[in-house]
Every structure is written in C-alpha cells, then in structure tokens.
Image (spheres, one colour):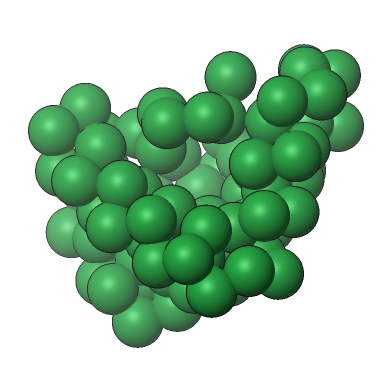
Length: 82
C-alpha cells in the first residue's frame, strides 16, 4: 500500500477541520504547504510563494486569507499551490 503525500493527507481531512486549522495556524500552514507541494510538483513559483507566505508579513496575510477562501470554495488550497 502506497502512503499518501503530506499534502494529500491534509487534503483528505474533513473541510471543517481544515478551515479551523487554517484559521488558527494558517500563518504557518500556507507557507509550509506550498513548500512541501513544491517538492511534489517541482514548480518553482510554488516554492517562491511558499517562502514569501512563510517569511513575509504581507505574503503571510494574503496567503492565509486566500487559503481560507479557496478551502471553503473548492475544498483545497489552490492559489499559488500548483
């Protein structure tokens, strides 16, 4: 049995749990999610967005709000996470 990636495990959580986690820990989840997603997809833009979201105040705020909205609308973090 193949193990799921970390991002796939996060995406498999119930929507309510993910939204609560993003509200409470979104300031770190957004950046870490994108950096881990980069290791899976090798999309350099995803890595840059993850680093900006993790280490800059404005990037962090934008990513947190965007992640909560995209999680509610599409049940997945989608903005700059391809």
